[in-house]
Image (cartoon, rainbow, N blue to C red; front, top):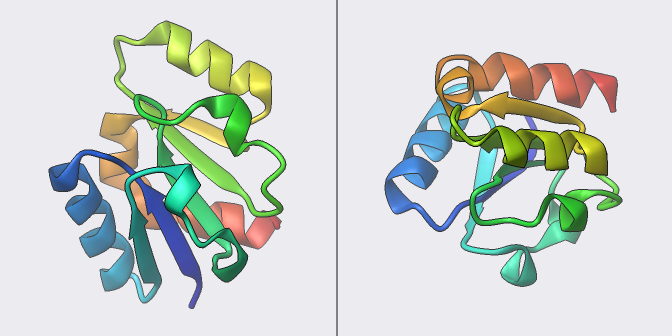
Amino acid sequence: MARVLSLSADLMLASRVDAMLTAAGHHVVLANSLAEAPLDEVELVVADLETENPEALVGLGVPVLGYYSHVDVEAREVAEGAGVDLVVPRSRMSRELPALAERLLAES
């Protein structure tokens, strides 16, 4: 399957992303920030918009799934305006991550 980069400073959330994608057959690379991420080695980025600048996530050459707290409408608007490929609330990401990842990978 695909190599997926999970960008999150929240260790609990990063471990949940890792577990869900690993169970779906993907290889997950964890990074605390975009600055330390091995972008040339991945096919998809899953990023916490609470810690990552959405504008920095656009143009990476791979699809990006950004997730945000459902109460942070501004984060959603900024990410969508910047052109992040798919922006979803954290709750939806937690429920549907493997399907969302497959959708983005199929579209790329």
